[in-house]
Length: 414
Image 1 (cartoon, helix red, strand yellow):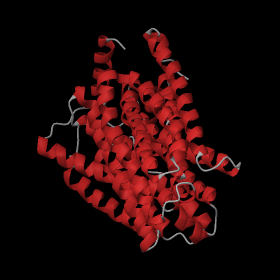
Image 2: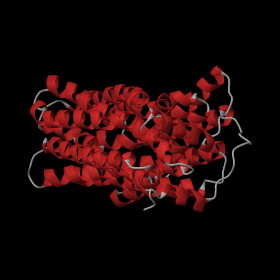
Image 3: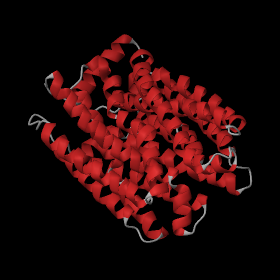
């Protein structure tokens, strides 16, 4: 995109996401509250991956069947993100965030008390419903209190809690599962969600200038080819990370021959990579804009191809999990790009971004489970993941060609 186009898209986003004047201290408090909510959601989303061995024993099922529990949560995000964004479009951001986080606390309590495999699948689906809408609205709230030229950094801050959850929350949840029982991990998530709710109520300003949005207006603005292309990049390209991450615990036990006590360390490797990638992605977008996508995806494909070769030893497994975790850089890049191409459909597009990433969270474990069930081995997830990263790059090339067309052709309705 040329400089004039960049300034025009920034102006469009400013109009669609009105600025809210807050002091620097107040901004920090708001971002802290939003980050804590992301930490709760990220801990819950990824906890089933680290708790897989405990759930296998508790429910009497196989690892790929626990993978279906992960996919059920992801499906809840895919369904809930656009649905709740549309239904909540008339609510102020503060009220919507409070409702979503309260819903999340209840969904995780249901997960903690699920008596059997089927009810756990249902509870995880319900818990996933508010996930995407929360992150979407949180990103818009962060942009509203930030400078226009720092949008990428603001979005990465809202997702910081998600990456810290992989680094800290998920290993803690795994440790809890191994010591006091996996159900307590979801109780912990509910408690953090309640604290988040209190902080948002205390610090998020009531924005009276925020105009309610009509659902049909957002749907019309949303239904454009560049929006769908960006969502497709996330859904396909990001699934490689989840393909490997979902089966990391059994891979460490069966291939690396690591003791169960070290599984949290492997999960923390993904978290460290996610933290690096999250901030790196925000800076990459501010520098390269949409062109950051192939840089991230091609780097991820190379790391995923190396995973099967490095999974045999703990000393090589840990660095490669960090490298693969850096694929998280794709999150803030695509989230901010969607703000540029979504026009007046800011809330719906921001929420749908997380639906796309959780479509990846459903697709990755499903494809990995198919490869493992077919007898290709635990490390085959690396090859499957590399393939999806390359497919995501091909979708980017299509999207970039679309954006190079004249403006009247670049954003057709679908």
